[in-house]
Each structure stands twice: as C-alpha cells, then as structure tokens.
Amino acid sequence: MAKLSNRDRILTAGLAVVHARGYAGASVRDIVHAAGVPQGTFTNHFTSKEEFGLEIIDLYFAKGRELMAQTLRNEGLSPLARLRAYIDANVARLSEDQMCNGCLFGNFTAEASDHSDLIRDRLLTIFADVQQSIAECLTSAVTAGELPADFKCAEVAGFIVSSLQGANLLSKAERSPAPIERFAQVLFTQVLR
Image (cartoon, rainbow, N blue to C red; front, side, top):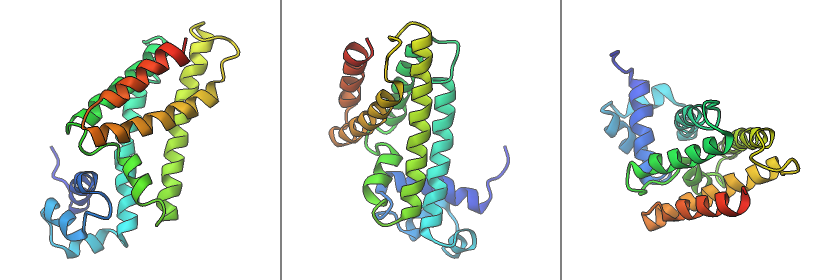
C-alpha cells in the first residue's frame, strides 16, 4: 500500500474530524493534529478552510457515488429494489458511528451554507446529482411496470432526497436509525405503490 502524502493525510483525517465535530467545531489545529502533520502543512496545501471544506465534501461524495453505482445504478436488481438498497446502504453508512455524526452533507448544509456560497453551491450540485440518480431509478421502475406510467419521477425524487436528509438529521438527534426506517416504510408502502 502506498504511503499517503501529507495532503491526503490532512484530507482523510480532516474529513473524520469535521464529520465528528462539525465544520466550525473542527479547528485547523485539530485537523493537522489528527493527521499527524505540522500545522504549517495545512496552508501548504489549502488556501483556506473553505477550500479544505470543499475538498472533504468531494471526498465524502466519492463514496456516495460508489454507493449509488452499487445500488441505484445496479441493473442486477429491479429498480425499486435498487432504491431500497440505496436507502439501506445509507442507514448502514450512518450506523458505522451509531448515528452520531449524521450525513456530512446535511451537517454542512445546516452549518456552513449560510457562510459560504461556494460550499452551498457544491452541496446543491451534489443534491441535484443524487436526485437525478433517484429519478432515473424511478423512471426505470415505470418502464419495468413497478410504478404507473403517469408517475411523477422527478418530483418524487426531490421528495425522497429532502425526506431522507430530514430523516438523517432526526436519526442523528435520536442516535437511532428509526426515523430513516420510518421514512422508508412510508415511502415503499404509501408513495411507491
């Protein structure tokens, strides 16, 4: 295995620190300490904490894209099974820390989007990408006969993204997957029938 560069160590460790403490709650000192590098190393690689924040958002989303490829875009599953797998995989991902940290995107949206247009715009792009992937999955469900021909795929995809983010926040507050599971139950028994 290749040795990580200082930059990669800062990103990897910094993502964990920011995810656990929040963007404002994680100082540059905390980040470099977790990475095991001198404090000046941070400014050698990032012009600002905002630039660093954008990069860890992208790093987190890289895993999100992998998750979407394995679930929403997995043609080995029926379309609604793909959507169910995506939601289940999100629960599993958030459960890795007993729901304590929540979704990094929701956390950044609540905490940093008022203070950084760049971060807000990046988050909006990511949410749009997720929504598009869900809409494509729902469109496949219509084609496969799992949903009616007049099903409003784009609108329901927006509802799913919004509702899932809200359920993620409640799961973080409750330290329980119950809000996400409740959302999934209503989604699959009431909305997608």
